[in-house]
Image (cartoon, rainbow, N blue to C red; front, side, top):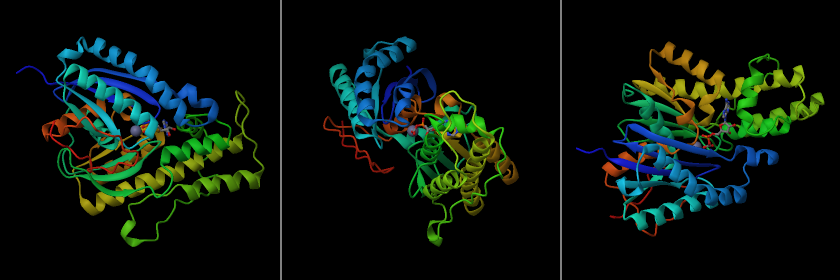
Length: 353
Ligand code: KG4
Ligand code: ZN
């Protein structure tokens, strides 16, 4: 049987991405055009700028993905697009473009949930598929959620952040300290040389006993702000060497974030006895998170799956992987598909094509 080839587009935040996947497993191309440098001067993503650049980038990025895969648009079997959650202007750019493409090329269109994409990345990356049920921690700039995956393509939400996402907390703290955007990689790098016990940040406690798998990072962000004011710390000037106090602050902040992330994952694993652990999303690049999650997995006697960077940060190959499962379930978008900025996982309606 000829391979089933799917072209996927992803524009939920500030990455314009297109990928071609064969049979839900073979990545024929995975092209990402990042706008990070464009948003850096503002210390965060500027939604209007992001949307405008998606409009400019979508055609060349799609052409590049098809070109690298060695395929013409007519040769793909279906087109998939992230329908939410994300920034509305960014999502609209991707959805409208995908609709136009699918309509012109007479291809079925598959709507995909962005987090389903992140959760499929570990399956796409692994040579031997993670055994189910799995506990998955999805941690990015826009989301921090814990899921149980009882079967392929089934995602049960166990907990999520009540305020900031973990990556957002990294970005906001970095902005406060004058460390630039995105904040995660620079805090990660500085923290490696700092004392993680220098500042006694305690992970947030969730009072509701039924929501013990939820996360909260806004209190920690405020604690960093108070510490900066109390100690009279100045933001680091561009290009300057950060002082010891800032390096230690980064290490202590990172420890508190990672303790809360890994702590919830371990508690969920102890309660639910999964057969594997998955770590995904942009923050999965964090060295301390990887190390502590690996140590926790070893203590629990469970395999831990962390995809490579190209599949953990926003990309369209993961969207194509989730789309292949959606395709197999018969999910198709109608021509009036609208993006949903707050889309909950599992709520995409799927009228027949
Ligand atoms: O998944 P992603 O590319 O986009 C979203 O869906 O949000 O994640 C981007 C986020 C940013 O907040 C960035 O600061 C964070 O991931 N990040 C990191 C690291 N690398 C990226 N956070 C902590 N440590 C890192 N090494
Ligand atoms: Zn993402």
